[in-house]
Length: 365
Image 1: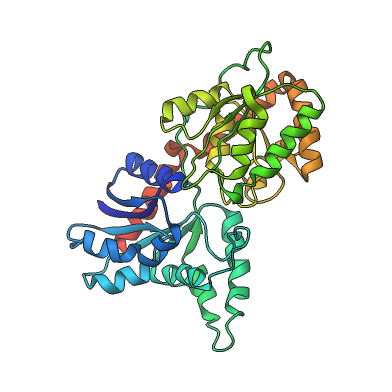
Image 2: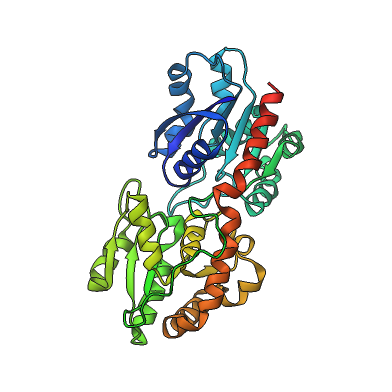
């Protein structure tokens, strides 16, 4: 069958997901996108772009989009024969943390709500994200001074499900490279977005604490930066000097993969993470993770590995990081077993579930 995929923010996890679905599905999926910048304006106005960009829906069996656009605006303005629609929630504006100095714009939350109501099917990228959204939704509606539409909670929940996004790595179990040579300092990987919600301050503070203990490491600062470089990264470039072996976004997927293969430890200090593609990729290619014991991480990391690789606070992050830097070879077996556990997130192992969702979507057309 043939589907139309509209992605208003074609970058980061949105881009990764869209390209993976298009390339792995047995269906024909036409992908139409807008660049990954000015996300607030995408939510406000992307529908006005797509309504003229796609003048005909002939021959399509369904519509796929993500929630950084008003689906209700789009479908009302199209005035074409309606398509059954699937919305994938990578994030939501009810629970997303505010940048320093920013006040909540309630309209973005209502856009998520009306988009969800306009959709025929909704997918969240983790149970953590699903639960957070539906915990917050009643509180958000209670902010209305009167005529609160409490009915929307059940209306949205009844068509919402969880399906993890696929990841671009080998699906074969047992695949992982050998541990990097011990004659080189361990390579610490940052492969998250360079934005406030990934909390780079705590990451660099932990590295400062490591240096105070006179432990050595190398540092690869990967990850995408959409508009301006945060001050923490500018300062880190000077502070860590020649310990930094890479600084900036690596556009080549093959070269990015090579950095992960060379990596020893991947760290997250995120304040917001609904799934964690970058962490899962790093683990799959052999990095040992250090992740906060919150957000989506306890969900994606099997429980048997929680004590070793999840931390409760900044103090425990520093202690576990220092121990790993000094003793990482003793984690060889756990590293390989954890890498194999990430196999379940490979696109090859998830695509049948996505195609089944699209089959169902088309049946309701």
